[in-house]
Image (cartoon, rainbow over all chains, first blue to last red; front, side, top):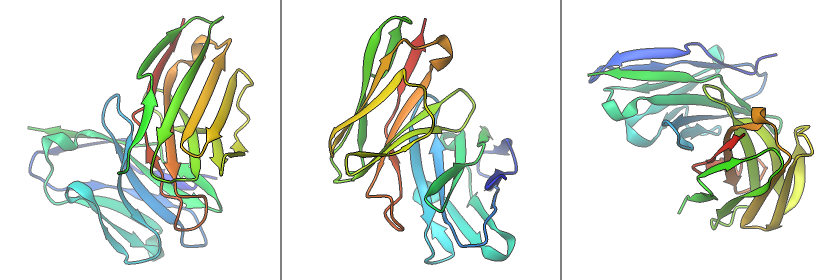
Amino acid sequence: AQSVTQLDSHVSVSEGTPVLLRCNYSSSYSPSLFWYVQHPNKGLQLLLKYTSAATLVKGINGFEAEFKKSETSFHLTKPSAHMSDAAEYFCVVRLANQFYFGTGTSLTVIP
Amino acid sequence: DTEVTQTPKHLVMGMTNKKSLKCEQHMGHRAMYWYKQKAKKPPELMFVYSYEKLSINESVPSRFSPECPNSSLLNLHLHALQPEDSALYLCASSLGLGWGRETQYFGPGTRLLVL
């Protein structure tokens, strides 16, 4: 059973427009949730994390995500895309001591 | 300081060679991880060490041999690899494995090519 689903494998936005990257998880409990970004040929950088505190989580570089238990979602947003945001984004769920990576969303930013 | 360092950055090896990948962190983290990442795919967990003891081995072939000599250092010894082992090898660390301690910080990776 898939524990985390990233609904879009590719997203393209124009520079200066909002970004929405979608993530849904499968769990009866509130998991720990993370978003990571990976630029080409680089390691993963933590953008933000949810660990049962505030449901709206602010991260680095203007990104934020909202934990919605009723929708089992943890979508990543940014009000205005920058060229440097072009990268691969991974949603990660921690359930019962296991980490589950989504398949990733490739974000393209069009000048 | 949230830095995990990995050496070397790139490695080319033949199928009969023996080589090692090195990972280091000085954040006082007591859990360390090895991942393998193929192109356009998410990282796949290989091994987890907690307090220098192997905690998780995700059925990795024996040609990959991890070692955790101390709480700051994690090695991955490679021997008789196959071309399909070519990938980006990522190291990560976290405070621990327990709730609230599990946030992982990743190194830049070692790009491995097996000829």
